[in-house]
Length: 351
Ligand code: TYM
Image (tube, rainbow, N blue to C red; front, side, top):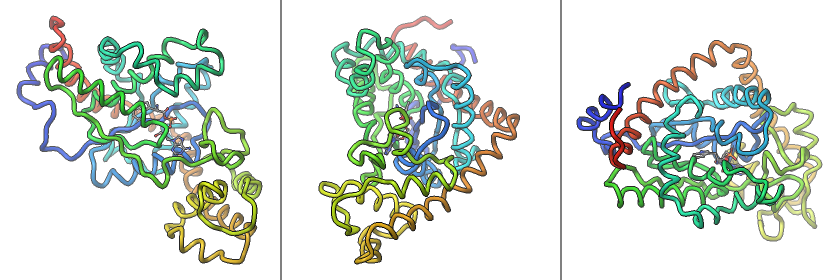
């Protein structure tokens, strides 16, 4: 669509319409061969549930995935597996706009503009950059890794998202998105919805089964510490059996003194729908062994259909491509509208 056309449309369509359903947007990086229980319980499951009440945008941030050294063939494979897993957990392309970030060039275009109103010091304070760059030394970290949170702000602001359902680790990036939206609005006129983080406390940080005070992480967890959505039942059972637990044998929720058992109780409660006190009561006097093996069974039962459906989607690449093409068209219609307003407001001539 020509930029002039888009700007004409702007006069007819209010950018920040209050008529529509609340909009949510979130993304998950294609940086592993499978997503894990932290991704699922902390984020993906909320996206699926919110489809009933919200206008949902859900995407795979492949541009973010090249901010660290990567293998191109693995990225392409993982992007497909990522989309298949989102469909398999219940993201419905009829109800949600499901797309791949690099199919919507407006993300990079808005990121440039936002980068120009982001302070160098402000970007330097992002703890994920500090963590990730500390591994190889800041000197060797890419500029892309440094500006990663600005691209994330562009992802969110392009769609005028009201809420962003994420885990706790994304809180600081969301603060930056809010600051940039407010700064832009103040400087150039009201353009962006200021997004609210949607962080569900109970599942905001699922921890590593081997180091129960650290978050379960695609990049940092050991294979034994991470339960993948695509793990075979045998592997899931083995990992729960070997999960690090705490002194004494009582199944009690006490994150400070019993982080291992508390994490397992959170997972149990999420999959069974039972409250933590009910689970505690059910295992009173029975010890960790029964609890761990019944938890493993619950998780196997929940993940087996997800694994099978993922494979079915992967077996039909033409269908995946069609879903993504449709998602990109829908996403670009919204993103183009916002970008045209931004370009006009910062003083760019229309092409
Ligand atoms: P990513 O790919 O690391 O994680 C995807 C989602 O999973 C959540 N999560 C967890 N939640 C609970 N416990 C855990 N152990 C756990 N590990 C991960 C994350 O908080 C996230 O919600 N920067 C983002 C991707 C992104 C994005 C966006 C998100 C790019 N643009 C715009 C929201 C909006 C990331 O790396 O997520």
